Image 1 (cartoon, rainbow, N blue to C red):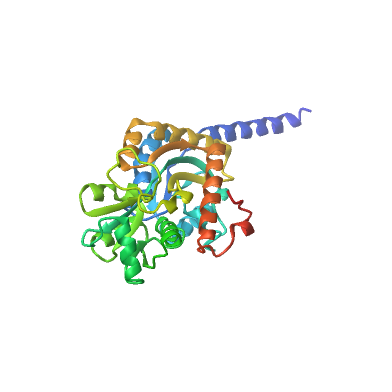
Image 2 (image 1 turned 120 degrees about the vertical axis):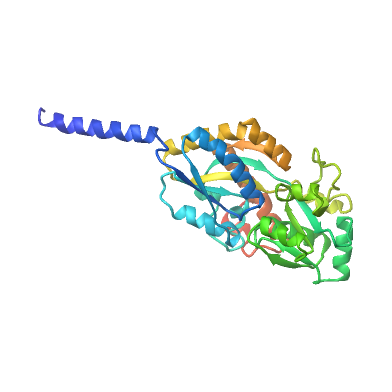
Length: 332
């Protein structure tokens, strides 16, 4: 028995040390991978929440934009990193569509939702030199000139792609999608006249609308958005859209699903407090998004519902390469 005591003591010391290490998460700076490029909605939300979360964590989160593949590149990168909780994915809704678009086998089932920060509203904006003063004008012009009008996009599965598919299903219009590495570059191209119009998250274009740099033709919603009553609802001239609404993008922070529980707990607490901070709430309100601040099981339920609604919308629009049914995604 005496011979066992040193071993038992050593094991106890090791366990205690491991416990202290886990309880001390994080003990070094973290890396945050932003799914989309600089200037877009995901980038803006990520950079607004990060300083507040850093204050709560006591460590820096080094942010890096890693766009491409409609979010598949950043998702794969974070998934390839160690499961230690030190690499965060600042993402949007796109991975939930990767399976039906054959972009990746990964989606948010492979990640733990640290916080779904907010959901956004989609708006259709046009270059100021275009003759359209309403969404109806755009649709009528597109029908007269099929294949001549250029639409800014962010690739398959991006917000413009989904909204464009929805619009095509309802109106039958034919436009040319021009892909960019995020909403920021796409909106810049729109203002420069390289594309004619673009569906985008309101968070990415609200300041441009306010400044008169682009004109808003319609909000992709069936009910008025507080503070945006001056922008027409897409259902105003096309009530057929009602069956697909409400719909919109969302923004969140994720870590690998198998990260240590201690790391998840620390991250959830830090981002929950940051998201509830009045400074972030004011930012979200002013930016045209709606605060959510949910994590864990509640966030997982939201993610599954969003995936079900949107993948089947694309399937019915003929825009899915793989049926949601083949991936086990139930029809809503």
